[in-house]
Image 1 (cartoon, helix red, strand yellow):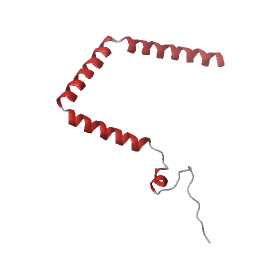
Image 2 (cartoon, rainbow, N blue to C red):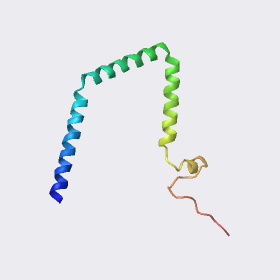
Image 3 (cartoon, rainbow, N blue to C red):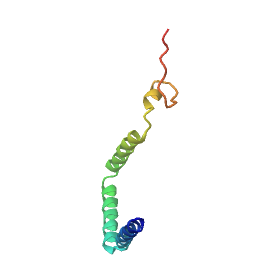
Image 4 (tube, rainbow, N blue to C red):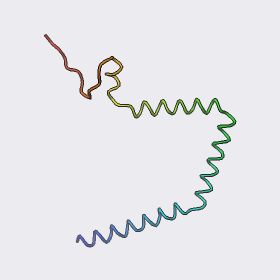
Length: 90
C-alpha cells in the first residue's frame, strides 16, 4: 500500500517538474515578459507623475495590509506588546 502511494506521488512529482521545466524554457513566455516590460516602461515615461502616484498608492495599500494588527494600540500612544491592555477596575 505504501509503495503504491509513493509510486503515484513520484509520478505526479515528475509530471509537475516536467511542466515547470517547459514553462521556464518557453520562449514565448520570455517574449511576453519582455513585451510587458517595454510597455510598462513606455507608460511610465509617458506619465511619470501618475506612475509615482500609483506607486505611492500601492505602497500605502500594501503597508496597511501587511502592518500588524496591533497598530490601534500604537496609535493611542501605548506600547504594543501583542496583548490587549488590562482593565484597571477599582
